[in-house]
Length: 67
Image (cartoon, rainbow, N blue to C red):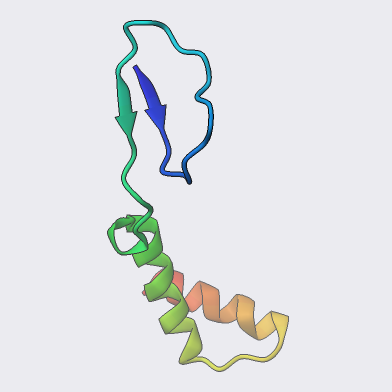
């Protein structure tokens, strides 16, 4: 089994065993990635604090993490 990422066509493929099966990965979709959804919610919550200093940012991150 050989996993192949979506990429522009190439002139040559790397050598692979004769009986290898190619599995193509789907294109990247941030809407389907759970970590992207989590970061989106965290960033939205932090925007509401409108912090401009590092200490206030740390306090805001702690507040978001506890909610």
